[in-house]
Length: 229
Image (spheres, rainbow, N blue to C red):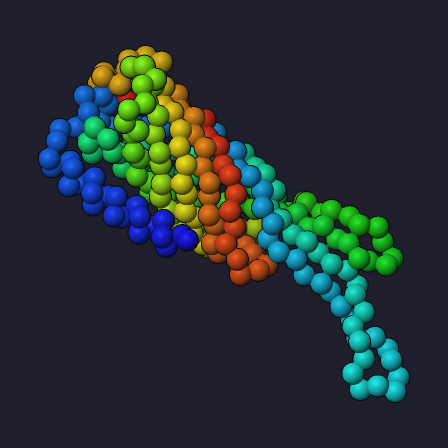
C-alpha cells in the first residue's frame, strides 16, 4: 500500500509539472512556510508469549507452561511539525516537511498465574519523520476568498530511537488526507498572507519498532500556522 502511495504521488508530480508549464501560477502566495502541533493516534505493535517447558517425567515432549503474555502498542502522542511548500500551478503544490514526537511504548502483561494484569508504559521513543507531499487545491468548493480546501498525499522516512539510545529502527510512512487553509491576513489572491491550517491524515506505517511484520494504519491531525509570500 505504501508503494502504491509513492507511485501515485510521483505520477501526480509529473502531471503537476506538466501543468505548470502550460498555465501560470496562482496569484496567491507562491511559497508557504507552516509550523505547529500534531496529534498522532496510537496503534498496536503485536503480542508475544513467554513460555517454559513443563516438568513432565516419563515423556520426551513435555508441554509448554505460559509465564505471561505481553500485548504491545504505541500510545497516542503530540508532536511538532514544520513544512515548506511551493505552488506549481493554480491547483497543485509540492510540499516537504519534518516532524518530531515522543510516543510511549506500552506493554500490557497478562496471563501470569502469580500476578494480576498490569500495564507498563514508562518507555518513551524519540520519533522523527521527513516526508514529501503533493497538495491538490479542490476546485469547485467555494469557502470564500480566505479559505482553501485541499487534498494531500505523500510518503516519507521514519526513524525511531528508544530512550536509552540502544535500539534504532527505521521505516516508511505513507499518508493521505485533507484539510483547509484559512488566511487571517491577506487572501488567496494576495502575495503576502498570514493564516492557519487544519488537516487530518490517515497514516500507513511500515517498519520501525515492531513485534510483528505488519503495516500499521493510524490517524493524525495537525493545527499549523502558515506564512505565505
